[in-house]
Length: 199
Image (cartoon, rainbow, N blue to C red):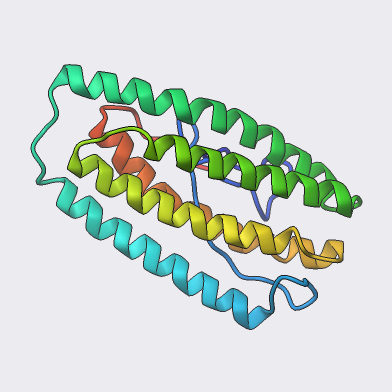
């Protein structure tokens, strides 16, 4: 899940999954939203930093793990992409819908956000169903943890009662996406896949 949102300079969600796309997390919030206050948002941003730091530590340890055989890497890469590609495609559509609606259609924007939540949760469940070796699994767990934080943020954003409070989450989401791409990049490296395109 990682396609950035081209229609919205302030926020282009990452999918953190496959192909030219990958996931991400966190963010700040807005006082006008029912879901949180600026203070609560700051707390979430702090969690994002923690998630990014943890992912970095996991990445370091993964580098010393026993290398996978070419056949195993190919098989696991195929399974990963089979989950990631559909999620990226869905997020692309939902991101574009949100970008079109966030300035003049609150109800539509909120629906797109909830669709993103469903896509991200489904991706997490499907990814966790795959059996990976320890080095990869460590990164998968970091990715899912980061994505859960993003899901919580998106749920709060979807409860916003004004377009302005809704858009206040855009910038935090951009930073959160970058945090999720840390384990995504490591997963792809371990599976012999090219790095995701950047947002």
